Each structure stands twice: as C-alpha cells, then as structure tokens.
Image (cartoon, rainbow, N blue to C red; front, top):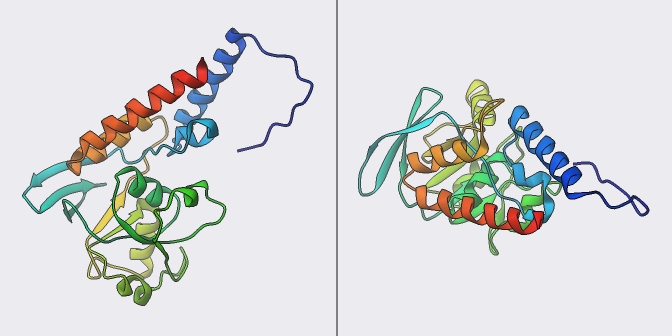
Length: 210
C-alpha cells in the first residue's frame, strides 16, 4: 500500500472521507484482495479467504470440504499447524485461530507481527518448500494458498502424504471477503470464528469512521 505523505493538506469533510472510503472498499472488492483491512492499517489485519468451499461431511474428529472441485479431509481441531506461505495461508490460519507451530517467513508481510509467540520459522521457500523441515514439526495440518498448492502439485514438490492439507481459496474478482471468509470457516465448522471477526471488524470500522 502506498504511503501518503501529507503535512499541509487541508482537512477533508466527512462527505469527502466517506466517498474516498467507499471507493477504496469498492476497489479492493473488485480486485479480489484477501484482506480488505490490510489497506486500512489502523483497523488491524483481518483476513478474507476462500469462496468456493463447502462442507460435505463431518464427524467428531474430521471434516470434509471441497475446494475448487477437490475434496480434502481435515482434522476438526488440529493441534500442530504448519503454514507453507506467509500471505493468504498465514492470513487464514491466524484468522481461524489455528495453533501454528511453524510458518514460512516473509519479513515484508505485516502478518509476521501476529504470528504466535513460539512459532518457528519454516525452512525452505515458497518456490522450494523443504519437506524435511515441515516433517520436523510433526504437523497434523498444513495450510497453503490454492495458487501455491497447484504449483507444488504441478512440480511434484509436496503432496498430502506429509499431512492433511487445507487449501485456502483466496476468492475471485468481485467476491466479498466477508462472504468468502464465512463460507470457508463454515465448511471447517468454525463459523463462530467468522462471526467474531466480522463483529470486531465492524466495531473497529465504526470507531475509525467516527
């Protein structure tokens, strides 16, 4: 996000600010950004992920979801989550309140400030994930964005033999991040998390606008 430097700009009217805010949100929605709040730094980094997921079956320990026509069986309440990339996947893992034990590290990402204390830096890179490093954390769930997961499969770099994989669908151009986020969390039987985030977002947005 560009930094706007201004020391002498006249104060804008409420109408002007509202208009700019509306245009910003509309632009983010059209471009299919994961995190609308990322552009509103004062509001904090709230996530937005997945639009094409749906729950198909649930049990006490497992939940089955479909992402982009692919079915995945995942633990309902994972204990050791490894995040394979520090953008969309980390965004969603933080949002879902997963117990992250290790994550790919991107110093340019504001999300690094929110990584839980004690979470380790995962070896390897986005382009070349390190299977040995991943396995060393004994994960029961891997989290990765849909684009990167497709790349790993095409290159034969990673598969579901290491651990169950949650593929985060970042949504499409024109999708609403709130609806997309709620859809995937509902499929994972974590709808209450989505409701808490939306409530927090709306409260902080109202405070910022005031």
